[in-house]
Image (cartoon, rainbow, N blue to C red; front, side):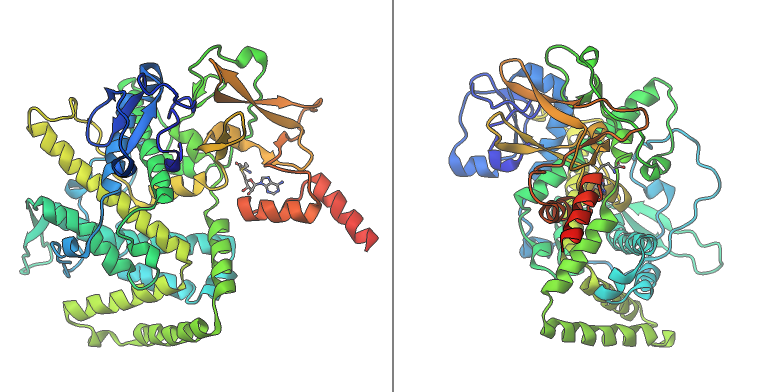
Length: 531
Ligand SMILES: C[S@@+](CC[C@H](N)C(=O)[O-])C[C@H]1O[C@@H](n2cnc3c(N)ncnc32)[C@H](O)[C@@H]1O
């Protein structure tokens, strides 16, 4: 991902600085690729979503379809969410409608294995909210959970959020038409209802305001920040490439392993040690490791840092929390307790049941780290963009003479599991990409190169290789000493010239771990002996 602040000066494929504007390919959000030499003017350029490539070769290597989709999605993600627009959507307070197979978005499965056994319906979000609050009902309570319980708490919280969101989104396309109350074999008859563009555009701004307001200013921002766009760009690209992979495997009649298994799988015990023979000459090694492009499975096999990150964020929130907000939290605790203790018969009407659910949801939000609320916001932005893109694709398919020559065959969709799988694997696994003068150009994920742990006495050194007139696309890993079989291959994550505590503090801050490499342990011992 080239950082947006670079304002399109870097090729999205080879990371080279694009000096020759006449030859570059600019891919704006609303149209297909065009070769242009025109410079976009100041403010327009800032608003515009553009991906730049040196030339057609780089665009081809990156994937024109992927680039076009990323640009279109980002165009939607950068749109302004306004209060007035949000009024076009009225939240529906109705009994929860279980998603039926017919209502599910058409997501090609990563797995070709047939599903076994009946599908277990997920609990209603009100149950999930209660369950999360029973596990922990204060920030400190969350911090005290062990890693397994914290992971369950996060799963439950995200599933509740997903339930709240999906319930409203399901109304965009479907509406319950009739309810038969005469017997237990009720069947909801579903009628397709076409909603206006304004209603579709209003759904997520409304939901964001309704579900997240009052807890964190960032969560109801009308505009998406450049940092968030960077994350969203990465997720969109990965999702799109994943579906291209699925399409390729399906058309080749291949067999895939279960995605869930992959997501949980421990990191493979591999090192990427490029010997001279492994190098593919010339350009075309971009995103490749040992000559192969990393796949979604490679991405999933990286270590997820969700639990450690959330732990660190809550600790930060607690450190900055003053006396006053502690008191407020105690008041909120009492309020939540009152809600939880409320007898069921007080909650008969649909509206009051809904209000109770919402009060409990707000209680849950109040104990989550602020950063997690920003992730909820990013998630809503993505779902909003994908909903609008799907609508746009459907319109384009029926309208001749659209500006986009070939409407995409792929409809993007996301749920919270997929979102978290991608989001928290990027954390502490991406590499900063720098030019020869060490200026940071952006970040990139190279899943296979991410298997290296850190050591303050590394035996592997990363080198950047220049290809074709200074293009710095390749990273190579070379051993610096003789490595015995079974010995761990480690690189260093940045500067290791400082003292042990300084090094550890930096690593803890950036990668969420306390380094216990042999050098740190030795130096720690020396410091203790001196004291
Ligand atoms: C890029 S990943 C390294 C590979 C990862 N351990 C795996 O199994 O896929 C970075 C993460 O590995 C862990 N890690 C790397 N070096 C470490 C070290 N010296 N001590 C403790 N944990 C380390 C930390 O959790 C860090 O966030």
